[in-house]
Amino acid sequence: MQFGAIIIGDEIMSGKRQDKHMAQTIATLGERGLDLAWCQYLADEPDLITATLRRTLAADDVVFSFGGIGATPDDHTRQCAAEAAGVELELHPDAEAEIRARFGADITPQRLMMGEFPRGSRIIPNPYNRIPGFCLQRHHFLPGFPQMAWPMMAWVLDNWYVDLHAAGRTAESAIIVRGAGESQLIELMNACLARFSGIKVFSLPHMSETDRHIELGVRGDADQIAAAIADLKTGVSALGFTWSETV
Figure 1 (cartoon, rainbow, N blue to C red):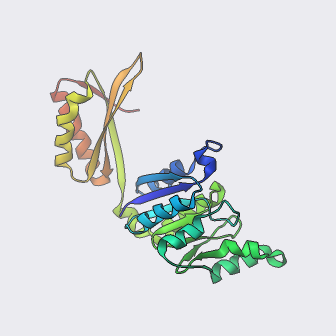
Figure 2 (cartoon, one colour):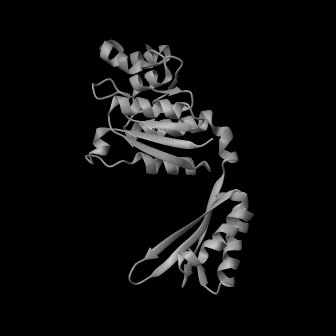
Figure 3 (cartoon, rainbow, N blue to C red):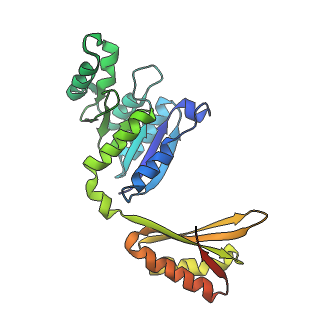
């Protein structure tokens, strides 16, 4: 099971606003020993959103979708999710209760529309203003506003996926290698991958005029990280290159 993110909005695709959801998703997952496997950005195009959700709903990934769940004409996510799942939109009773509690005598049909979710959904509580998001299968649909979406994402992880926290515990360790080109480290990296099945090896060249080096490291199963980075250190030294710890 992997974690993915879908970030929806013309304002992101046009550059009018800079996305912050991906970085926060990575951080929120990382705090729980989990990784983001993929992220996709989509404009407010119903056909594109529906096609994407139809594909991702057919997989087993846990997906966080940000944006487009309001009731204005440019919000399409609720309708697209229903179409992708082959179900109808309906006013969710728990969402209705939350929205009525939020607005009281000022409730309107337009405000209640924000509680119309695909049939079979569960609500995700919104601590900011009580307008909930919704969960459909393993997809979790959140507002585009960070102050609402980020606490809701954390709530989902801590209430519905807490059993995955320890199981997905990841760590990372790296060294700085000088005097080597990436091609000279490929065999060493492949040997490390073959030896430790629960990790990934990465190589990040830094090519400034004053300091050229390679950040060589491993990320993955926390129980294997110490042995894997030790393996890389030994291999780098055996190849005749110098290395130092990252700061």
